[in-house]
Image (cartoon, one colour):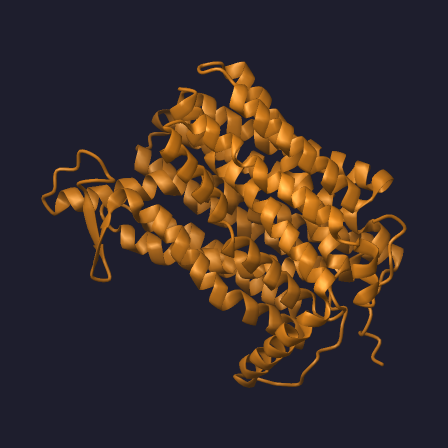
Length: 460
């Protein structure tokens, strides 16, 4: 057996490597916060609308009478960004599994993390070129950036079981997730300062947003250098292919893993439970702004402040979940967190229109549970992955999350349309947390860990 077959966890080198690993959470979070959540949706819609108006259309509303052309199809300008998110998910469905298989087969995880991260960061920075009416450039650049982001996350997660033992995995995962929210919050605060202070900086609104895109890409790339310097290879390659043969070997590896996954039904059961409750989490995060603006009649300034509150509170929430997991174990802490999600969503239902303090209180509650729930799911799932298959199983983890992420918005939209109010729509999302709680509770975590041949942690 090669001395690379098992992780090396000597105290001095592993601590440095673990700290370096966490920096990728800090580095990539700017893409989700500043780019996707805040700036790209409105900016892309505005550029698409400008294209429609340049063709002679009178755009009263971007959703109804303002069409643009893409690959021969006529699309409402207001639907460009939602459609783009859907297309980006489909592209990831094609790329992520083979990326994970190649990472496991070659064990070039560090190199692959670097390539995917730098490609995503470069495409993000190049969004600064999008201006006037060239919204189609933004489409292609975002697709590239999103693939780079998703593939880098798969490889990044696969390092977790290699650099830390089973008893410390929850701690590292929650610290990394918390660190990521702090990084996203700091980057977003800087970008909002640029955007809101654009007049003092001598920038137009368009120029300010493009500066944010450019600096987001630089942020992502620059902080990725830290994990790239510290992460190491811990396992021997599973194949000796070179060049194009690596791709063929990756497909063979993926096919074997998909067939082999049926031998681990408890791992798949936990994955199914995760996909249900994480859909509820992502839906609440995505529609919080819509709920605040349309149902509660709050200003955009309040909504921007809310985003910052969530980011910074999530930093403390991640650490809190880690501390609780050290006492209760990851599974029990996830169950506690899901109960808290039910309480937060219920509180959101009762927030009075125009009441900023109540809305901030709900944002505080979301922040407390937002990062920690998924961080512990990430670490607990790592215990249930067969050794040497980390990247492939995490590609299924990421794909499943994206493949089911339409269920929550669909339920929310259907209930809102049926009732004419967002209040019953938001309370309907409780079903994801209740069902997730039941399914997580039913998974025998210790048996799942033992079934794949991993050492059992003291607490689960």
